[in-house]
Length: 177
Image 1 (cartoon, helix red, strand yellow):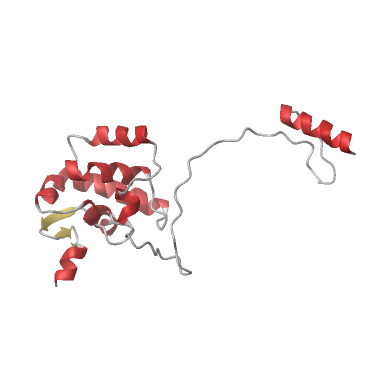
Image 2 (cartoon, rainbow, N blue to C red; image 1 turned 90 degrees about the horizontal axis):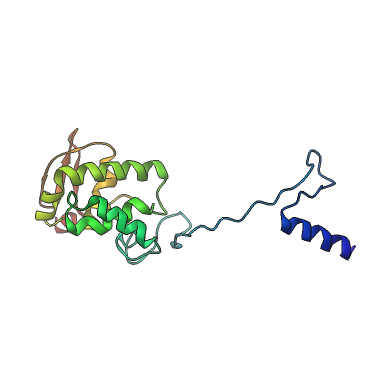
Protein backbone atom coordinates (compact mmCIF):
# COMPACT_ATOMS: atom_id res chain seq x y z
CA UNK A 1 0.00 0.00 0.00
CA UNK A 2 2.85 2.42 0.82
CA UNK A 3 4.45 1.99 -2.62
CA UNK A 4 1.12 2.60 -4.37
CA UNK A 5 0.52 5.76 -2.32
CA UNK A 6 4.03 7.04 -3.04
CA UNK A 7 3.50 6.39 -6.76
CA UNK A 8 0.20 8.31 -6.77
CA UNK A 9 1.76 11.24 -4.90
CA UNK A 10 4.61 11.46 -7.44
CA UNK A 11 2.07 11.52 -10.29
CA UNK A 12 0.00 14.23 -8.58
CA UNK A 13 3.08 16.36 -7.99
CA UNK A 14 3.87 16.17 -11.72
CA UNK A 15 0.33 17.31 -12.53
CA UNK A 16 -0.85 13.97 -13.93
CA UNK A 17 -4.50 12.96 -13.81
CA UNK A 18 -5.15 10.30 -11.19
CA UNK A 19 -8.29 8.17 -11.52
CA UNK A 20 -10.42 8.20 -8.40
CA UNK A 21 -12.74 5.51 -7.24
CA UNK A 22 -15.63 5.57 -4.85
CA UNK A 23 -17.15 8.85 -6.03
CA UNK A 24 -19.82 8.69 -8.72
CA UNK A 25 -19.16 10.86 -11.74
CA UNK A 26 -15.55 11.71 -10.92
CA UNK A 27 -13.13 10.27 -13.44
CA UNK A 28 -9.95 12.07 -12.57
CA UNK A 29 -8.31 14.84 -10.70
CA UNK A 30 -6.01 17.51 -12.08
CA UNK A 31 -4.13 19.52 -9.52
CA UNK A 32 -4.28 23.26 -10.08
CA UNK A 33 -1.35 25.55 -9.30
CA UNK A 34 -1.63 27.47 -6.05
CA UNK A 35 -2.26 31.18 -6.30
CA UNK A 36 -0.70 33.51 -3.76
CA UNK A 37 -2.94 36.31 -2.52
CA UNK A 38 -2.27 39.14 -0.11
CA UNK A 39 -4.53 38.89 2.93
CA UNK A 40 -6.12 41.84 4.68
CA UNK A 41 -5.50 42.31 8.35
CA UNK A 42 -8.06 40.89 10.76
CA UNK A 43 -10.45 43.24 12.52
CA UNK A 44 -11.95 42.64 15.94
CA UNK A 45 -15.72 42.32 15.93
CA UNK A 46 -18.19 41.56 18.68
CA UNK A 47 -20.88 38.87 18.47
CA UNK A 48 -23.20 41.27 16.59
CA UNK A 49 -20.59 41.86 13.87
CA UNK A 50 -19.88 45.40 15.07
CA UNK A 51 -16.34 46.74 14.98
CA UNK A 52 -14.62 47.03 18.36
CA UNK A 53 -11.35 48.64 17.29
CA UNK A 54 -10.30 51.23 19.85
CA UNK A 55 -8.56 53.40 17.25
CA UNK A 56 -11.68 53.82 15.14
CA UNK A 57 -12.55 52.61 11.70
CA UNK A 58 -10.57 55.36 10.00
CA UNK A 59 -7.38 53.53 10.98
CA UNK A 60 -8.11 50.97 8.24
CA UNK A 61 -8.24 53.71 5.62
CA UNK A 62 -5.66 56.20 6.85
CA UNK A 63 -3.13 54.10 8.79
CA UNK A 64 -0.35 52.03 7.28
CA UNK A 65 -1.53 48.64 6.09
CA UNK A 66 -0.26 45.81 3.93
CA UNK A 67 -1.24 47.35 0.61
CA UNK A 68 1.11 46.99 -2.31
CA UNK A 69 3.21 50.19 -2.18
CA UNK A 70 3.41 50.46 -5.97
CA UNK A 71 -0.40 50.25 -6.30
CA UNK A 72 -0.78 52.88 -3.60
CA UNK A 73 1.69 55.23 -5.28
CA UNK A 74 0.01 54.66 -8.66
CA UNK A 75 -3.38 55.67 -7.21
CA UNK A 76 -1.88 58.72 -5.56
CA UNK A 77 -0.20 59.70 -8.82
CA UNK A 78 -3.47 59.42 -10.75
CA UNK A 79 -5.25 61.65 -8.22
CA UNK A 80 -2.48 64.22 -7.81
CA UNK A 81 -3.62 67.59 -9.10
CA UNK A 82 -7.34 66.90 -8.67
CA UNK A 83 -7.41 65.74 -5.02
CA UNK A 84 -6.11 68.10 -2.30
CA UNK A 85 -2.91 66.82 -0.68
CA UNK A 86 -4.42 66.19 2.80
CA UNK A 87 -6.81 63.63 1.28
CA UNK A 88 -4.45 62.04 -1.25
CA UNK A 89 -3.17 59.12 0.82
CA UNK A 90 -6.55 58.31 2.39
CA UNK A 91 -8.25 58.51 -1.03
CA UNK A 92 -5.74 56.07 -2.56
CA UNK A 93 -6.07 53.63 0.36
CA UNK A 94 -9.85 53.94 0.29
CA UNK A 95 -9.93 52.77 -3.33
CA UNK A 96 -7.62 49.83 -2.70
CA UNK A 97 -8.99 48.35 0.52
CA UNK A 98 -12.64 47.68 1.25
CA UNK A 99 -13.44 48.01 4.97
CA UNK A 100 -14.23 44.65 6.55
CA UNK A 101 -17.64 45.81 7.81
CA UNK A 102 -18.82 46.95 4.35
CA UNK A 103 -20.29 45.04 1.42
CA UNK A 104 -18.76 45.56 -2.02
CA UNK A 105 -21.68 47.44 -3.69
CA UNK A 106 -21.75 50.00 -0.85
CA UNK A 107 -17.98 50.42 -1.05
CA UNK A 108 -18.08 50.95 -4.83
CA UNK A 109 -20.87 53.53 -4.42
CA UNK A 110 -18.82 55.31 -1.74
CA UNK A 111 -15.77 55.35 -4.05
CA UNK A 112 -17.84 56.95 -6.81
CA UNK A 113 -19.38 59.48 -4.41
CA UNK A 114 -15.95 60.31 -2.98
CA UNK A 115 -14.47 60.91 -6.43
CA UNK A 116 -17.31 63.22 -7.45
CA UNK A 117 -17.16 65.07 -4.11
CA UNK A 118 -13.38 65.54 -4.23
CA UNK A 119 -13.51 66.81 -7.83
CA UNK A 120 -16.19 69.38 -7.05
CA UNK A 121 -15.70 70.22 -3.37
CA UNK A 122 -12.25 68.94 -2.35
CA UNK A 123 -10.53 72.34 -2.19
CA UNK A 124 -13.40 73.87 -0.17
CA UNK A 125 -13.49 70.85 2.19
CA UNK A 126 -9.77 71.28 2.85
CA UNK A 127 -10.19 75.03 3.45
CA UNK A 128 -13.01 74.31 5.93
CA UNK A 129 -10.83 71.85 7.85
CA UNK A 130 -12.48 68.58 6.88
CA UNK A 131 -10.18 65.69 7.82
CA UNK A 132 -9.71 62.45 5.86
CA UNK A 133 -11.69 60.79 8.65
CA UNK A 134 -14.58 63.21 8.09
CA UNK A 135 -14.78 62.03 4.50
CA UNK A 136 -13.80 58.36 4.61
CA UNK A 137 -14.56 57.07 8.13
CA UNK A 138 -16.33 53.78 7.55
CA UNK A 139 -18.90 52.55 7.25
CA UNK A 140 -21.41 55.12 8.53
CA UNK A 141 -19.74 58.21 10.01
CA UNK A 142 -17.86 59.49 6.96
CA UNK A 143 -19.49 61.73 4.41
CA UNK A 144 -18.88 59.45 1.42
CA UNK A 145 -20.81 56.63 3.12
CA UNK A 146 -23.70 58.97 3.91
CA UNK A 147 -24.03 60.28 0.35
CA UNK A 148 -25.36 57.04 -1.23
CA UNK A 149 -25.49 58.58 -4.70
CA UNK A 150 -26.76 62.02 -3.67
CA UNK A 151 -24.35 64.77 -4.72
CA UNK A 152 -23.38 67.61 -2.42
CA UNK A 153 -25.05 70.95 -3.18
CA UNK A 154 -23.68 73.12 -0.34
CA UNK A 155 -21.21 72.93 2.49
CA UNK A 156 -19.99 74.82 5.51
CA UNK A 157 -17.82 74.22 8.57
CA UNK A 158 -18.58 70.65 9.65
CA UNK A 159 -21.63 70.04 7.46
CA UNK A 160 -22.59 69.15 3.88
CA UNK A 161 -26.04 69.47 2.39
CA UNK A 162 -26.93 66.85 -0.22
CA UNK A 163 -29.31 67.00 -3.14
CA UNK A 164 -32.72 66.05 -1.75
CA UNK A 165 -32.15 67.99 1.48
CA UNK A 166 -30.28 65.46 3.65
CA UNK A 167 -27.69 67.07 5.91
CA UNK A 168 -24.43 65.39 6.99
CA UNK A 169 -22.55 66.67 10.03
CA UNK A 170 -19.03 65.70 11.02
CA UNK A 171 -18.63 63.80 14.27
CA UNK A 172 -16.72 66.79 15.67
CA UNK A 173 -19.66 69.11 14.89
CA UNK A 174 -22.12 66.71 16.53
CA UNK A 175 -19.99 66.59 19.70
CA UNK A 176 -19.98 70.40 19.93
CA UNK A 177 -23.78 70.61 19.87
